[in-house]
Length: 416
Image (cartoon, rainbow, N blue to C red; front, side, top):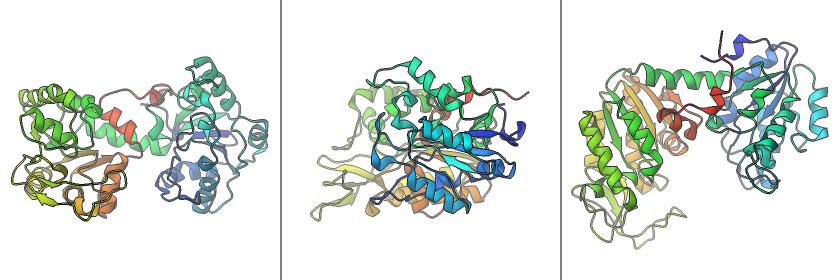
């Protein structure tokens, strides 16, 4: 168990907090979805109540070590200020510039300062100005960040699977470190699911590629009672069993692997459920999430997809079957979208499954949903308030499901 915020003294201390404010912005650079900001408020309020000076660090987008004006954190600071009901200082200077360091040094206890986007510096991701891997540069950058604080709090679950300057490097220079309330909550729920799951334990997996979830599936086969697979990755599994998939997205180079995973599931007596039928179309614009007016949309009679068509959602037989599995579950994890749910005509499968998970949770199951698309699906179904835990880090939760140790957690000191 790692040290938590309540295990250390923060009174009259300068506290550096790694948060994950990688939030979507609109064309006017205003925050569209503030869920990740809201998730950190309990940690920030605790620090303020304990008279700490709070210095927040985060990244936004993928500027690749360059200053990108559309990825500034100005509007993030404004939204955080609105949510807290108090000013959040933001100067927009380089995060380790003399101006930023002076602001941090002059910060009074009970005040908040948000540093500019960490990823405007290539060193944050372990690179130098030429874009080359440079651990020495990363280490030097981490040391400069650390110079601004007395205490380090890790509250960015979504970045814990990355060995970056602000996640692992900084802990070398600030030994007084702990997890914040958000990360503590994430680890509690995910740990509960994997260490003491109540059976039946059901995993719902979606997304485009089997290759993205190989490790997850292999690890889950040692823990779950049932696996439900939807989304495009289901077509690779089906094709590996000789089922026609039309021109649906299939990883042809992973067919043997898919067949092997199905074999392992059978050997370990894990029920592995693939769609019994599909919603299909002959035309779709994936990039713009658009259905041409002349497109033919229909439902297959079984798991086979005819030539000239592509699978875009699970069909009614699959929905009915998945309901019977989910309704009896006592532990549920869900990662990855089922179908092209962003298009309303192809969202029934994802929305129905979201409602099934919510219903099972109402009946006593513990449910954990991770990954942006899965979260979007439960919100589309208006059941996000009924899920036991919605993970703020899709990539981190996926690696947790895979059984990997998260570098950002390993770096932190253990509780006594």
